Structure formats: structure tokens, C-alpha cells
Length: 163
Image 1 (cartoon, helix red, strand yellow):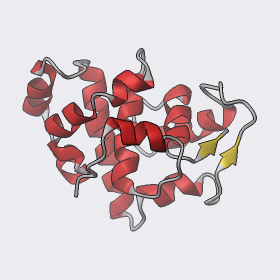
Image 2 (cartoon, helix red, strand yellow):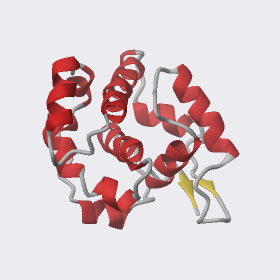
Image 3 (cartoon, rainbow, N blue to C red):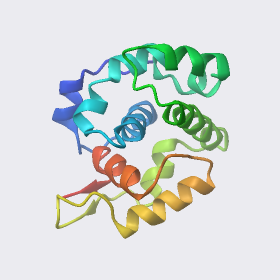
């Protein structure tokens, strides 16, 4: 099921805790595409991501292959960075691996904070030592394009880190 949420809703709910795998995947995707851009610009492409990435359905995105990457890269409305497009697909595959192990992506992410959001004093932080540690663990799990900044912003968007 695709979460039918507009960009305005994401901005309104940015930072609100979510335990929904689908929403977390969309937020992670925005984080991947946000590199070099603003969160607002990357989030503004959500309708394009949903259209080009099989409704952002995790199993379907995980099954995309090279012809799909070429198709997505050809969309003039897409942020056409092939590395980012491949990262979204690889991240869907990493989420599937987590789900197939018997847990949810939400439980995996919230497990880093024992189900309690981390509260920071500085809302201007774009990365943290904690996010660096989480990013390292995520990379070991098969995620890509999840450096400290992407991971920090993703966790802020998901309400895992709050300020």
C-alpha cells in the first residue's frame, strides 16, 4: 500500500516519530536524493519517486534492474543521478533482507535508540557521532548512500532524532 501523503504533509510531519516501514523507506529515499540539494527540493520529488519506483513499494523496488535504472534515469522530472537511483534500489533490497529475517525496518531503526527518540540540543546539526555509528551499521546491513549526514537527516525526519 502506497502512503498517499503529499509533500506538505511530509513537511508538516517532518520529525514526527513513525514506525511504518513504507514511510521510513520514502524518508530514506528523500534523504538519498537530498544530497547536494535541500530537503524541500528532494521531498518535492515524492510524486516522481512514487511514479518511477513502482509506487515506492519495497518488494517491487528491490526487484528493479538495469533497464529500470535506465528508464528512471531518462525521466526529465527525476533527479537523474544513477548512483542515487541505484542506492534506492539497493536500500529496498537491504530492507527486504531485514524483513525476511523476521523483523521490520522500523524495529531495526528504532532498535538503535531502544524505542525512545534521541533528543539533541542543537536543531542545526546535520550529522552526529551517533548517526555515524548508525550509518556504519546500516552499511554493514547492505544499505548504501547512508553517510552520517543522510542518516542523521533521515533519523530526524523519522522522529528517531529530535531537537
